Length: 303
Image (cartoon, rainbow, N blue to C red; front, side, top):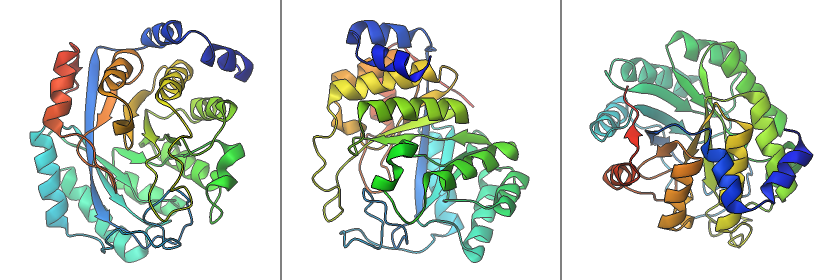
Protein backbone atom coordinates (compact mmCIF):
# COMPACT_ATOMS: atom_id res chain seq x y z
CA UNK A 1 0.00 0.00 0.00
CA UNK A 2 1.12 3.55 -0.62
CA UNK A 3 1.07 6.37 1.91
CA UNK A 4 -2.39 7.64 1.00
CA UNK A 5 -3.92 4.17 1.26
CA UNK A 6 -2.30 3.54 4.63
CA UNK A 7 -3.50 6.89 5.98
CA UNK A 8 -7.04 6.01 4.94
CA UNK A 9 -6.71 2.64 6.61
CA UNK A 10 -5.22 4.23 9.76
CA UNK A 11 -8.34 6.38 10.10
CA UNK A 12 -10.78 3.52 9.48
CA UNK A 13 -12.84 1.69 12.13
CA UNK A 14 -10.40 0.44 14.78
CA UNK A 15 -11.99 -3.00 15.09
CA UNK A 16 -11.83 -3.52 11.33
CA UNK A 17 -8.24 -2.25 11.21
CA UNK A 18 -7.12 -4.69 13.92
CA UNK A 19 -8.98 -7.49 12.18
CA UNK A 20 -6.93 -6.83 9.04
CA UNK A 21 -3.62 -6.77 10.92
CA UNK A 22 -4.51 -9.98 12.78
CA UNK A 23 -4.51 -11.86 9.46
CA UNK A 24 -0.71 -11.54 9.41
CA UNK A 25 -0.28 -12.93 12.93
CA UNK A 26 1.09 -16.28 14.04
CA UNK A 27 0.05 -18.09 17.22
CA UNK A 28 3.47 -17.58 18.80
CA UNK A 29 5.11 -14.94 20.97
CA UNK A 30 8.89 -14.51 21.17
CA UNK A 31 10.62 -13.27 24.32
CA UNK A 32 13.87 -11.33 24.37
CA UNK A 33 15.73 -9.36 27.03
CA UNK A 34 18.81 -7.22 27.46
CA UNK A 35 21.62 -6.22 29.74
CA UNK A 36 22.37 -2.51 30.05
CA UNK A 37 26.11 -2.98 29.72
CA UNK A 38 27.14 0.70 29.80
CA UNK A 39 24.96 3.53 31.03
CA UNK A 40 24.98 7.29 30.47
CA UNK A 41 27.52 9.87 29.26
CA UNK A 42 26.31 9.71 25.67
CA UNK A 43 27.57 12.52 23.43
CA UNK A 44 24.37 12.67 21.40
CA UNK A 45 21.53 15.12 22.07
CA UNK A 46 18.49 12.87 21.48
CA UNK A 47 15.75 14.87 23.19
CA UNK A 48 13.99 11.84 24.68
CA UNK A 49 17.01 10.18 26.27
CA UNK A 50 17.99 10.03 29.95
CA UNK A 51 21.51 8.94 28.99
CA UNK A 52 22.45 12.05 27.02
CA UNK A 53 25.27 14.11 28.54
CA UNK A 54 23.46 17.21 27.24
CA UNK A 55 20.84 16.89 30.03
CA UNK A 56 21.19 16.62 33.80
CA UNK A 57 18.94 13.64 34.42
CA UNK A 58 19.05 11.55 37.55
CA UNK A 59 20.47 8.33 36.13
CA UNK A 60 23.62 6.62 37.40
CA UNK A 61 26.47 6.52 34.91
CA UNK A 62 28.73 3.46 34.78
CA UNK A 63 31.36 2.09 32.39
CA UNK A 64 31.21 -1.21 30.51
CA UNK A 65 30.33 -4.05 32.86
CA UNK A 66 32.27 -7.29 33.11
CA UNK A 67 31.91 -10.31 30.87
CA UNK A 68 30.94 -12.37 33.91
CA UNK A 69 27.98 -10.07 34.64
CA UNK A 70 26.82 -10.26 31.02
CA UNK A 71 26.90 -14.05 30.96
CA UNK A 72 25.24 -14.35 34.38
CA UNK A 73 22.37 -12.13 33.22
CA UNK A 74 22.04 -14.03 29.94
CA UNK A 75 21.77 -17.38 31.72
CA UNK A 76 19.11 -15.97 34.04
CA UNK A 77 17.20 -14.73 30.99
CA UNK A 78 17.39 -18.17 29.37
CA UNK A 79 15.97 -19.76 32.52
CA UNK A 80 12.98 -17.40 32.17
CA UNK A 81 12.10 -18.48 28.63
CA UNK A 82 14.09 -15.83 26.75
CA UNK A 83 15.69 -16.95 23.48
CA UNK A 84 17.29 -13.67 22.36
CA UNK A 85 19.62 -11.70 24.58
CA UNK A 86 21.08 -8.27 23.76
CA UNK A 87 24.16 -6.45 24.98
CA UNK A 88 23.23 -2.75 24.97
CA UNK A 89 25.61 0.18 25.47
CA UNK A 90 25.15 3.93 25.53
CA UNK A 91 27.00 6.21 23.12
CA UNK A 92 26.99 7.11 19.44
CA UNK A 93 29.48 4.36 18.49
CA UNK A 94 31.67 1.88 20.37
CA UNK A 95 35.28 2.91 20.92
CA UNK A 96 38.06 0.47 20.04
CA UNK A 97 38.70 -0.82 23.56
CA UNK A 98 35.05 -1.40 24.39
CA UNK A 99 34.35 -2.86 20.96
CA UNK A 100 36.96 -5.57 21.48
CA UNK A 101 35.40 -6.41 24.84
CA UNK A 102 31.93 -6.54 23.27
CA UNK A 103 33.23 -8.99 20.66
CA UNK A 104 34.39 -11.14 23.57
CA UNK A 105 30.89 -10.87 25.09
CA UNK A 106 29.41 -12.11 21.80
CA UNK A 107 31.81 -15.06 21.68
CA UNK A 108 30.73 -16.11 25.16
CA UNK A 109 27.01 -15.59 24.53
CA UNK A 110 27.23 -17.84 21.49
CA UNK A 111 28.44 -20.64 23.75
CA UNK A 112 25.16 -20.61 25.71
CA UNK A 113 22.89 -23.25 24.23
CA UNK A 114 19.40 -21.87 23.72
CA UNK A 115 20.36 -18.19 23.46
CA UNK A 116 20.70 -16.14 20.27
CA UNK A 117 23.13 -13.24 20.60
CA UNK A 118 22.06 -9.67 19.94
CA UNK A 119 23.77 -6.31 20.31
CA UNK A 120 22.74 -2.66 20.35
CA UNK A 121 25.91 -0.59 20.48
CA UNK A 122 25.24 2.41 18.26
CA UNK A 123 26.21 3.52 14.78
CA UNK A 124 28.63 1.12 13.06
CA UNK A 125 31.33 1.54 10.48
CA UNK A 126 31.93 -1.17 7.90
CA UNK A 127 34.84 -2.76 9.74
CA UNK A 128 32.81 -3.05 12.94
CA UNK A 129 29.84 -4.60 11.13
CA UNK A 130 32.12 -7.12 9.47
CA UNK A 131 33.78 -8.02 12.80
CA UNK A 132 30.45 -8.57 14.53
CA UNK A 133 29.36 -10.90 11.74
CA UNK A 134 32.65 -12.79 11.88
CA UNK A 135 32.15 -13.32 15.62
CA UNK A 136 28.76 -14.86 14.96
CA UNK A 137 26.42 -12.12 16.15
CA UNK A 138 22.94 -13.28 15.23
CA UNK A 139 21.05 -10.00 15.33
CA UNK A 140 21.89 -6.31 15.59
CA UNK A 141 19.48 -3.73 16.94
CA UNK A 142 19.44 -0.17 15.66
CA UNK A 143 16.26 1.91 15.54
CA UNK A 144 15.37 4.59 13.04
CA UNK A 145 13.43 6.05 16.02
CA UNK A 146 11.17 8.28 13.94
CA UNK A 147 10.38 9.32 10.38
CA UNK A 148 13.16 10.76 8.27
CA UNK A 149 11.13 13.96 7.85
CA UNK A 150 10.95 14.43 11.64
CA UNK A 151 14.41 13.29 12.70
CA UNK A 152 15.98 16.74 13.03
CA UNK A 153 13.29 17.55 15.62
CA UNK A 154 14.55 14.85 17.99
CA UNK A 155 18.32 14.91 17.40
CA UNK A 156 20.91 17.22 15.83
CA UNK A 157 24.21 15.43 16.57
CA UNK A 158 23.61 12.72 13.99
CA UNK A 159 20.97 12.21 11.31
CA UNK A 160 18.47 9.64 10.06
CA UNK A 161 20.80 8.58 7.27
CA UNK A 162 23.48 7.61 9.81
CA UNK A 163 21.04 5.15 11.32
CA UNK A 164 19.82 3.93 7.94
CA UNK A 165 23.39 3.28 6.80
CA UNK A 166 24.07 1.15 9.88
CA UNK A 167 20.96 -0.89 9.06
CA UNK A 168 22.28 -1.44 5.54
CA UNK A 169 25.65 -2.61 6.89
CA UNK A 170 23.95 -5.10 9.20
CA UNK A 171 22.10 -6.56 6.22
CA UNK A 172 25.20 -6.50 4.02
CA UNK A 173 27.12 -8.72 6.42
CA UNK A 174 24.33 -11.23 6.85
CA UNK A 175 23.13 -10.44 10.36
CA UNK A 176 19.46 -10.19 11.25
CA UNK A 177 18.21 -6.67 11.86
CA UNK A 178 16.05 -5.38 14.71
CA UNK A 179 14.92 -1.86 13.78
CA UNK A 180 12.01 0.08 15.21
CA UNK A 181 10.70 3.37 16.53
CA UNK A 182 9.64 5.47 19.50
CA UNK A 183 6.04 6.66 19.34
CA UNK A 184 4.67 9.78 21.00
CA UNK A 185 7.52 12.22 20.37
CA UNK A 186 5.32 14.77 18.64
CA UNK A 187 5.21 13.11 15.24
CA UNK A 188 2.08 13.43 13.08
CA UNK A 189 -0.11 10.58 11.88
CA UNK A 190 1.40 11.05 8.43
CA UNK A 191 4.88 10.64 9.89
CA UNK A 192 3.82 7.43 11.62
CA UNK A 193 2.79 6.16 8.19
CA UNK A 194 6.16 7.29 6.83
CA UNK A 195 7.88 5.23 9.54
CA UNK A 196 5.89 2.16 8.53
CA UNK A 197 6.92 2.57 4.90
CA UNK A 198 10.55 3.31 5.73
CA UNK A 199 10.69 0.14 7.80
CA UNK A 200 9.13 -1.79 4.94
CA UNK A 201 11.99 -0.60 2.73
CA UNK A 202 14.60 -1.59 5.33
CA UNK A 203 12.94 -5.02 5.89
CA UNK A 204 13.98 -5.77 9.49
CA UNK A 205 13.27 -9.18 10.95
CA UNK A 206 12.10 -7.50 14.15
CA UNK A 207 10.41 -4.12 14.71
CA UNK A 208 10.65 -2.99 18.35
CA UNK A 209 7.91 -0.58 19.33
CA UNK A 210 8.69 1.89 22.10
CA UNK A 211 6.23 4.42 23.49
CA UNK A 212 7.86 7.53 24.88
CA UNK A 213 8.21 7.57 28.66
CA UNK A 214 8.96 11.25 29.29
CA UNK A 215 12.11 11.66 31.38
CA UNK A 216 12.47 14.63 33.74
CA UNK A 217 15.08 17.20 32.71
CA UNK A 218 15.03 16.16 29.05
CA UNK A 219 13.47 18.41 26.37
CA UNK A 220 10.58 15.94 26.07
CA UNK A 221 9.83 15.77 29.80
CA UNK A 222 6.30 17.14 29.27
CA UNK A 223 5.42 15.00 26.24
CA UNK A 224 2.89 12.89 28.16
CA UNK A 225 -0.04 13.45 25.83
CA UNK A 226 1.50 13.27 22.36
CA UNK A 227 -0.14 9.91 21.64
CA UNK A 228 -3.06 8.10 23.26
CA UNK A 229 -3.74 4.38 23.54
CA UNK A 230 -6.07 4.20 20.56
CA UNK A 231 -3.48 5.82 18.30
CA UNK A 232 -0.81 3.43 19.57
CA UNK A 233 -3.07 0.53 18.55
CA UNK A 234 -3.75 2.11 15.16
CA UNK A 235 -0.03 2.60 14.59
CA UNK A 236 0.79 -0.97 15.59
CA UNK A 237 -1.81 -2.31 13.18
CA UNK A 238 -0.49 -0.20 10.30
CA UNK A 239 3.09 -1.26 11.06
CA UNK A 240 2.06 -4.92 10.94
CA UNK A 241 0.14 -4.50 7.69
CA UNK A 242 3.06 -2.65 6.08
CA UNK A 243 5.60 -5.15 7.49
CA UNK A 244 3.78 -8.50 7.51
CA UNK A 245 6.96 -10.60 7.67
CA UNK A 246 8.48 -8.65 10.56
CA UNK A 247 7.89 -9.48 14.22
CA UNK A 248 6.48 -6.41 15.98
CA UNK A 249 7.88 -6.36 19.50
CA UNK A 250 6.65 -4.58 22.63
CA UNK A 251 9.58 -2.72 24.20
CA UNK A 252 9.98 0.35 26.41
CA UNK A 253 6.84 2.27 27.30
CA UNK A 254 4.29 -0.49 26.77
CA UNK A 255 3.27 0.06 30.40
CA UNK A 256 1.57 3.23 29.16
CA UNK A 257 -1.05 0.91 27.67
CA UNK A 258 -3.77 -0.64 29.80
CA UNK A 259 -3.57 -4.37 30.40
CA UNK A 260 -6.58 -4.80 28.11
CA UNK A 261 -4.92 -2.95 25.24
CA UNK A 262 -1.61 -4.75 25.70
CA UNK A 263 -3.48 -8.03 25.33
CA UNK A 264 -5.47 -6.73 22.37
CA UNK A 265 -2.23 -5.80 20.61
CA UNK A 266 -0.73 -9.22 21.34
CA UNK A 267 -3.77 -10.82 19.74
CA UNK A 268 -3.84 -8.63 16.63
CA UNK A 269 -0.43 -7.16 15.70
CA UNK A 270 2.39 -7.78 18.19
CA UNK A 271 4.33 -11.08 18.20
CA UNK A 272 7.30 -10.30 20.42
CA UNK A 273 7.99 -8.97 23.90
CA UNK A 274 11.12 -7.54 25.44
CA UNK A 275 10.61 -8.84 28.93
CA UNK A 276 12.02 -7.55 32.21
CA UNK A 277 13.23 -3.98 32.66
CA UNK A 278 14.54 -1.78 29.87
CA UNK A 279 17.41 0.69 29.79
CA UNK A 280 16.07 3.42 32.05
CA UNK A 281 12.43 2.36 32.53
CA UNK A 282 10.66 -0.63 34.06
CA UNK A 283 8.64 -3.38 32.41
CA UNK A 284 7.07 -6.66 33.50
CA UNK A 285 8.71 -9.76 34.89
CA UNK A 286 9.16 -12.75 32.57
CA UNK A 287 6.69 -14.70 34.71
CA UNK A 288 4.02 -12.02 34.19
CA UNK A 289 4.60 -12.05 30.44
CA UNK A 290 4.49 -15.84 30.24
CA UNK A 291 1.21 -15.80 32.16
CA UNK A 292 -0.20 -13.36 29.59
CA UNK A 293 1.01 -15.53 26.69
CA UNK A 294 -0.72 -18.54 28.23
CA UNK A 295 -3.89 -16.56 28.95
CA UNK A 296 -4.13 -15.57 25.29
CA UNK A 297 -3.67 -19.15 24.11
CA UNK A 298 -0.38 -18.31 22.43
CA UNK A 299 2.80 -20.38 22.37
CA UNK A 300 6.29 -19.27 23.32
CA UNK A 301 8.85 -19.39 20.51
CA UNK A 302 11.58 -21.89 21.39
CA UNK A 303 15.23 -21.77 20.32
